[in-house]
Length: 139
Length: 405
Image (cartoon, rainbow over all chains, first blue to last red; front, top):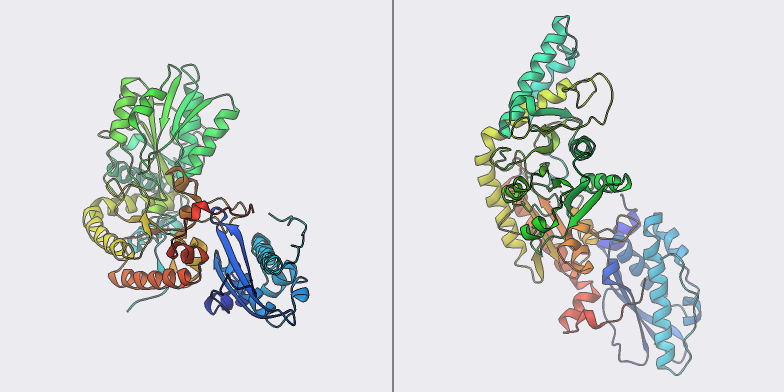
């Protein structure tokens, strides 16, 4: 199966690989997927508490090229967005941007789940309620 | 000079040996006759060529030429051998014993037989990929007609104890079928010494052309018969109708002849390269060889690199190195290799595996390039892997509650 150029580019030059201090109150961490399924994504955001803006985002992903590219792209999109804007990122935006084939749609769903999990982690740490999301249907 | 891409997926198929192509060419153009045409020189030439090839093929496995049934490949041979015995020996019984690590051509054939009312026992394998002979013997029933165990596994290269298996089978009057696809031409296989009654194999795994293979069917002690699965002109002693693929068969014969002559020298060279590749890759942390290293084909190794995913790993170099992974990320099922899982590997290790298959055309330079490329990619992806980070922090990954997904 051939990958799109954008997937290859993210795979070869992933953006924002790394780790933020998960103990920090301004950092939200989302860890989704499972080793058994062949992909695990960890996505972290750093939020400016005063403005609600995402100032930094990092990821580490165990998975195929599409999973790596989806998380790399997600971190790029997250930086500079407000938390509320970040919640609007839809997995289909990722599918479209990376030209993911149908068998790889789950990678984009995982990235969306990771964003939501990171935001919820941040919210709970800062005394807000976790947002309830509808179950992803693709898996 | 190193030429890219490098081909290390020789368990999938091998390149053709130029000597094989040379032998085949005249049978496309000048000697194009139908081997069943009895009344003119075109037919005689074709028949003669097929007879010669039949001898070459038989010789490689220590068989009599009359025991070779040409087929379209190993999948057909597996189907004909197993279904053919099931039908032919229906009055004797309906039970077949096989193993969970067999090729799909065997497993799905057995499932088909179950639908027809047959009974099949699927033996588990041990961690090294070999079956337990005591379990095999215990599984034999009065209604058992066939034991179908592959000679060598396509994913991990494990060589089964065929001789011991057939000794048990003989004791109980059960026939032995073996899928010899990966073994024939690579290691010495002798149907008499090994006690095999039926064996399927194919040309394209041993430097021959695709689309041609053979089913060995024993003629003496005991005389074995299979019910034809294809009706027609009664070719191949009535067991496999269909006009013979003369150029393919000629190429198959030549490929067998070359394997017979070169096997020993090829194996020595290939084992040296394979062992070097393996030793160097095993220098990476958390790398594991899958399957027995003692009972194994000379050209195969299967290694898991923990905490990196196989398909992601392949992507790091698959423009330049052709390899397979036990990961299932390319398929929609998300299920990794059933063979690796049968060894007791966790899904995580099964997802992290690479299969290397060397050939007589593999060079030292290619192996050096491969070692470097794979080592670099593993290190790069581990830097990117959350699992590797957790492992390095001393977190036991099995204690984490992973979100169902």
